[in-house]
Image (cartoon, rainbow, N blue to C red; front, side):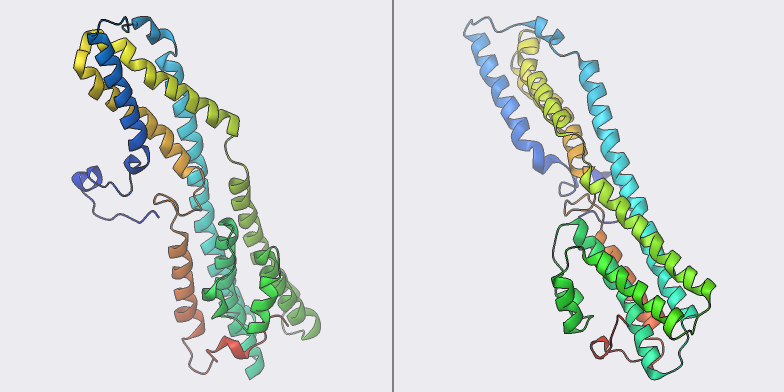
Length: 309
């Protein structure tokens, strides 16, 4: 997963193999070099493999434009996902602040419910992360909830929406039944929920609408044809140097294409994907230190609380 790099020098980045695409494409690059070796051997055996006309088979400018479009499209998705997640974390902070400042504390029970729902904000963001990764809720969430609520979430198809509905029920109870908050505060709390829903839906849009598969397949076909046609073009002029030259060109083209593939879905576990775990841990730490545990009189064991009413 991508880490935030601080004070990295040019050399540090140049030798950083773990976050590069070299480990992914090296087999394909070696395959093109082996093919170039075979063509060079055939050329020395007197076989007519020198075919410069193959340079017109796939014009380089056409392939370049296709690669640029592929990479730009993938980076747009990556950058939009990054902005959405920063907005999502900020929306979670705003919801925590609104609950803390708007919801009154008239009794120990009301303070306990308020404390629980502030923690539930962090659980919601973690649930969105797991939803985008197509994973089930884990022990990290179980430790922050009552066993009954955790069991209910396990039976739910869309966990983030179920948690959002818990918030909606809590706010409705505060306004309609307990009548402890005015209408404008009720609207403000629900507006915070609306913002989270919109950001969550935008992340799902990125996840569920990848680049058309036919485009990706066709680009891979063109790359293979182009790379395997290179030895026929260079063998007469470069002789044995055809092998490293083909390897360098293949490395450049296949690397650009693979970068687009890796960052197309920014919510996964690739090393260059967004650090979603770090985002969630940061928000959870802020919740525990800034809104929950600052006052020792507020109960800290959420397993004794009822989060939905």
